[in-house]
Amino acid sequence: MDRCGLFAVYNNNTDVLQTAESIYYGLFSMQHRGMEAAGICVNQGGHFKYKKDEGLVIDIFDAQTLAGMQGHAGIGHVLRYAQGDPRELAQPIVIRYTNGQMAVALNGGLTNTNELRRELELQGAVFQTSEDAEIISVLISRARNRYGEIEDAIASVMPKLKGAYSLLVMTPGKVIGVRDPLGIRPLIIGKKKNSYYLSSETCAYNELGIEPLREVDPGEIVILKESGLRSLRTGAASEKAFCAYEYVYHSRPDSVLEGMEVYEVRSRMGAQLAKEAGVPADVVVWVPNSGLAAATGYAREAGLPLEDAFIKNKFYYNKFVHPTEDMIRRGVTMKLAVIKSRVKDQRVVVVDDSMVRGETGKILVDLLRDAGAKEVHLRIAAPEVKHHCDFGGNDKDEEALVSNRKSPEQIRDMIGADSVAFLSLDGLKQACARTYGGLCLACFDGDYPV
Image 1 (cartoon, rainbow, N blue to C red):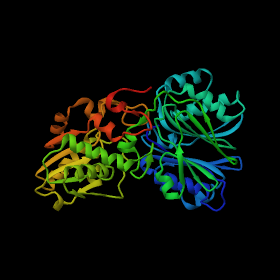
Image 2: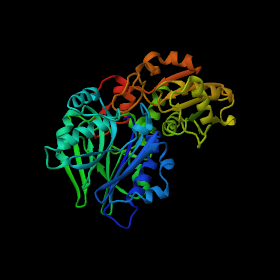
Image 3: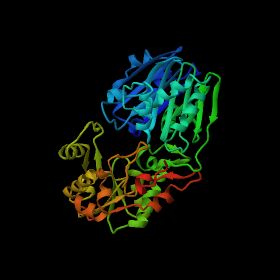
Image 4: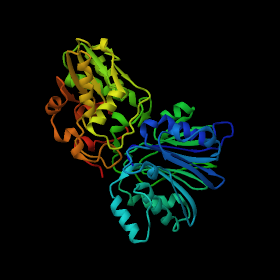
């Protein structure tokens, strides 16, 4: 399940936000991780109540709905890039089996989905969705019959799961967080008074006054229950492979992942880009919203003024399922406009976080040209995305990736810019340099950790 957001709570406090409200606000703060569907499941004295649907968190849940979903524990999920009907693919997945009820929510993607599904179908399993989360829930439920504790059943299943997964599992007595042995996708433990939380990003904790404790370690299973927090370590891989795209685009700038603030990392990417691919210019502009940090770093390093030239329509979000080229152009021009006085007769460097398909780049250049820019130089604060991602990242169709088919010079000609340049792979590594271990760079260099 591509680029999703997870939030969970085991609520041992009576004087803080109720469980469903905490999850609602946690998911709302991570809406950028998924805008196609959302869901919340709460534990009401051993019985699960849940709601999930297509759309934004704020559209699915109102005060009356949340008031009817109170309980002492719960998990939530926002969905991005559904390959099918978002209503059917919304999570958490809730099942009944011989040991009762279980709810599962996943951020990530498995590389052996077809193999696992085929194996389970031959054993009599019937699936309702195409989701990896459903496959995992079936594997856990079957293993549960052989183990006394649900966490032991999960540990027995983990070696079968190939790929990236941060996972939430809720039973009538526990909330469990799981992270794959490579630590590809993020999952952070938080605490407020006697309650414990799990979240894909710390930005959710910032807004709820929750103290981030630490990352769930690669290969770790974290159990939240009435008595507190317990850890079961199943073994990490020899080297971590945290997704570099979390720093490039996926995460909110104020989140701290793997010990580093996302904004600061992106600013370093922009500064490195200016060192590698600086060009004579009058002004630097940024693409809302994820381009700001990189543009700030670029402008500071280049000694150029940074201008807010683009205006973003705050009421716009993309709901096109299969957009045509004309629909994409109409959508992006509805989304962005240019303040002409900021760029007219100027040599402009426009900084964006990354380039996947390339359509937005042409729109940016056209908008700046129409506003009177004398030159337009596009700078991308990430390396060229040339390879598909099976771990919950960019487009899985390599032919759709513009850098898979075209050189920077060909992209320049395609979008009508005066020049186009990308951050080097070494530059990205320098910007992300830290002591927490390795990075997954597969979408850039094709070296897949699984």
